Length: 104
Image (tube, rainbow, N blue to C red; front, side):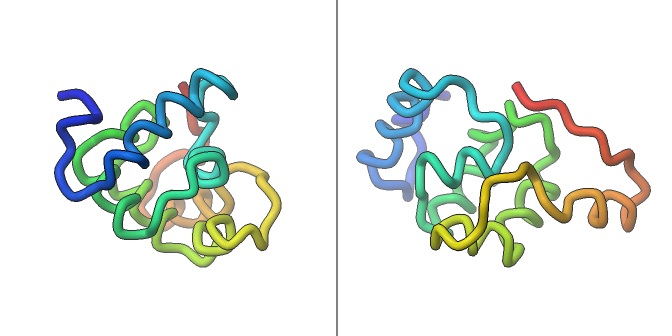
């Protein structure tokens, strides 16, 4: 499925994702994606749920947890510096997973 086929997300946002990737390179993590693409929270939720962000190397529950965190909200508002997926180590510790991530 291509990005254009995702329902419930504005076409302008869907077009911005590959354009920004071409301009700035691969997205390093969710924080990088949010900072560069600036999706609305509802649109970000749809992108996570349909698997459009699976290439970031995290599970969908991990991505959703990060998207729901105050950190992600701060990134969307431009209030926090970009320093990776803050808080993910705590989340993974609670579910018994390693804190290493692989960004694609």
